[in-house]
Image (cartoon, rainbow, N blue to C red):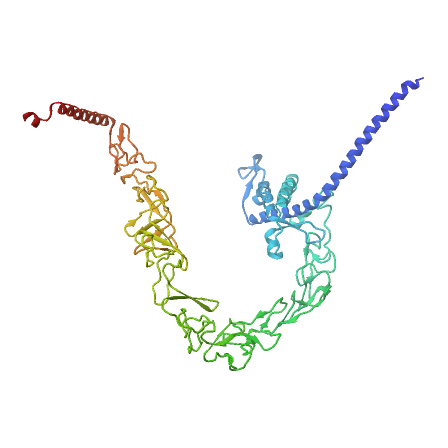
Length: 621
C-alpha cells in the first residue's frame, strides 16, 4: 500500500500541470477571439479591395481583348506520323488567356489602388471608387494617404494568395460578375464572405439586385431591397439627392419664373415647408428646377415678378435703375431736379451713377467743392476748392491759376503754390515741372537753386515728395550717366577681374547687363540710371582676353605658338600677363632673362666708371 506521504506530492504535481494547460488554452482562446474580431474589421476593407482589383483586372483584359496573338506551347514529337510529318506534343493557346498575360496583369493592378478612395455612401457596403469618378459625380475630395497605402498593401496580399484563382479566371474568360463570385465570395474566409447580399432600399444592382450596389440617382427612388433598377419619378418631379427610398421624396420642380433653395417645392423641414418663390422684379428664370433667378442685363427691369424670359426686361424710367438706354434715373419722373421725366440729364446739370443703380444729379455750381462738367457742355470746371476766391490756385470762375498745382480728391480740389525748396517736387499751371526739390535753394548739392538736376548728379524721389541727390559713383551698385561721368557697368564693388573694373569699365572677355531701370530717377539731358549689373565671362578662345578656365589667350586659335587652339599653355612654353598673352619657350625665356640681367649689369658698370672719371667731354676739358 502506498503511503499518504508519497501520494500527496503527486496530487499537487498533477493539479499544477492541469492548471498550466488550462491557462495556456484560455490565452489561446482569448487570442483567437481577438484575431477573429480583427479579421472581421479587415474583411470589410478586403472586400472593397477585392472588388476594385477585379475591376482593374477586367480593365487590363480589355486592352488585349481583340488580340489574335498566340503562344506555342508544343514541346516535343509523338511517334504518330501524318502526311509525312510527326505530330507535336502540346498546344497553341491565345496570348490573352495565357498564364503569361495573367502574370502581366497581376503585376500592374495594385499600383492603381493609389487612385482609389473609400466610398461609404451605400449602406452596409465598403466600396472603393476611383477618386476622379467621385470628384466628378459627387464633387467631394475623399483622398487619404493612409488609406491609399493600406489599399495597395491589401491588394498585394490578395494577389499573392489568389494568384492561381485569378489565373484560372482569366484562362476561362469569366465575366466580371463570375470572376467576383469565384474570387471575392464563396466561404467564411473569402474577402466578401459566403455570398452576395441584396441591395438595400434606395439602391439597385444590375447583377440580380445583389451587391455591389449603386445609389438611385437624382429623380429616382427604390422602396424595395434586392432591386435590379430604380424607379423614375413622374415628369416634372425630382429628388433632393441620391438614394431616395419613397415616391414621396419625388418633389415638384420649380416652374420657370420661380426658384427655391434646392429647385424643388413642397420639401418638409423642421422650419416648415419650402415652396418655390417667384423671381423678383428685375430678374427672370426661363428654366425649371432652378435655385436662383437671373438679373436683367443693361440696368433694365421687369414690370412684375415671376418673369420667365429676358425679353421681359425693359427700361423703366423712375425705377432707380439706370439702364444703358437712359442718361439718368434718380427714382422719380419729376423735372427740375437734374433728371427729367424721360430720364434725360437737364441743361447745366451732371448726373453720376453706374448702370443698374440710382443716379445722383446736381447743378454745376462753382464753389460747391465738386469739380463738375455739365453733360451738355454748358458749364465746365477745371477745379473747385469750395470757394469763389482768387489767388488760392483755383480762381473765382473755377479755373487754374498760374504757378499753382491743384489736385483732386473725392471731387474737391486742393491747390498749393509751386515753390522751389519746399521739399516737394511738383509742377503747376503755366509753370515748368521741377526736376528736383531737396528742400533748399543751394547750388552744388545736386539740385540747383532753381530746382534743376546738376551735372554729374542723379536725383530720385516721386512727385510731391522730397528729392535725394547723389553724385555718380563707381561701386555703389547703380550704373549711371550724368554729364561727363558715365559708367559702362557697376556691380557694386571696386574690384578688378570680375568683369566690371575698379573704374566701372567692362573688362575684356566679359559682358555686363542690368535687368531693371531705376524708378523715379531724374538727371540732366541724356542721363540714365540702372540697377546693379551682373557680369559673366564670354570665354571665347582667341579673342585676346584670358578669362574663366583659359590658361592663356594670344589672340588666335593656332597650335605650336605656345598657346594652343584650346587656350591651354603648351608643353615647354610660358606665357606672360600681357593682353594678348605673349608666349615663348622656356629656353627662350631663360635666354631673355639672362640677356636682361647682362644689360642691367652693364648699365650699373658704366655708371660706376662714369662716376669715378667723369664723362669723355669732362676729360677733354
